[in-house]
Length: 166
Image (tube, rainbow, N blue to C red; front, side, top):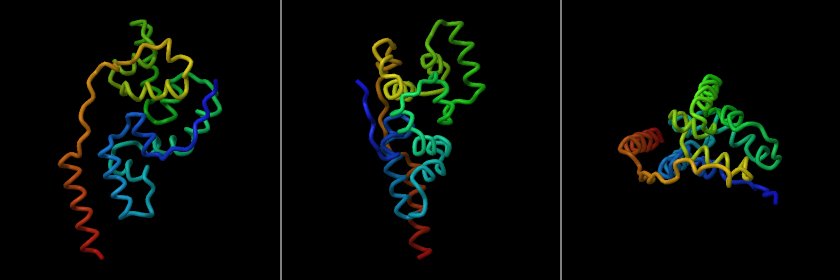
């Protein structure tokens, strides 16, 4: 059964992919109220939480890829999303042959990508492989997602700048 994916907001997709946290999304959405001419992906990239290439990939290409089911290796998609470089992929390919692991497992083991991000790509682009794949480090406890003091400081400065410049 083919699953057709419909539009989701970029913030929701990036959260599901494990690329941003809920507090980061909240802060970026607040920023967007002050910078209405900026897209959410631009704000997230400006804050350094995702690369601009990654935000653009999910806005411009994600739904087409998911709905067309043109299959390339997972590394192709991770590189296209700006999450891995060509060098990273070469390194992963060498390592996965050495340790007899799958590509995603090797990328996670090498610290190049988060387990939740690999699972997100597998779930959406390779659903038939879900039953065959090991759940990549799903048993690790999730860290709490809190707004940091840096977020609060940044928000206070941005709010103050907006109030004083009006």
